[in-house]
Image 1: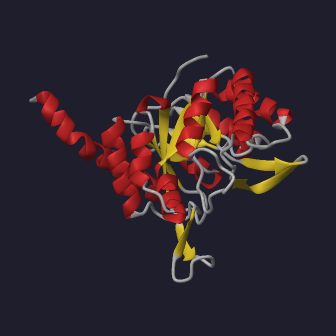
Image 2 (image 1 turned 90 degrees about the vertical axis):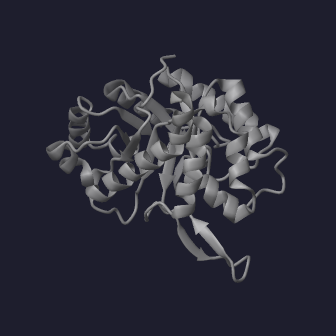
Length: 289
């Protein structure tokens, strides 16, 4: 498998409403991430994206390769993703630790999994199939969680580590998801980061969430992973800690709903670069001294 990486700087998620502006203006940004599902049935958008590949590294983040589906992944969809990645030649391909299909129907959500040996066998087999089909390493993203399964026999970290060991895949650490899940299911977000092996992590994500009343816990809030707001300050703080632990990593600003102006995304990316630089400054000072 080829080993290619995005730059260790901040990039933005490129959504279709910003595509023409990106092509016309070519703003300064280190890299772009796209969802292939937005392009597979849109030849004109794919042609515009190909123009951008000359100026920007492209990462492909699939929301339709459902590695957690018990009935097997959709091989026709995976074949389309393979053809697309061959055409675009991205620096990285990733997807979610979740399931989103059932009996041939696609669900408009990324649904959670119990962390058991049975689930582990299913996900590992599917990740292996994805990597064999694409001919490259696949990076698996930690989910946003709202409940914990009582049937789980291992922690999320243990589950991810074992998937990496069995398949050779990499991890995409969504820092905002770590913070959100820790708040919703009451664990220590910083301890979660401490347990990750930095060498397994090939990319970081940062996205906005929306607080909503938690019906199960009166008076409490549930954080919902809407990607419809700026990155919240506690997620920025966890990101700085993560960079301090792992060193520089390609970092994506995700914003999918209530999409702002392109300039807003570029500003968020600049904040990510500044935050990472500040997080690394003490270590750099020690090395230079």
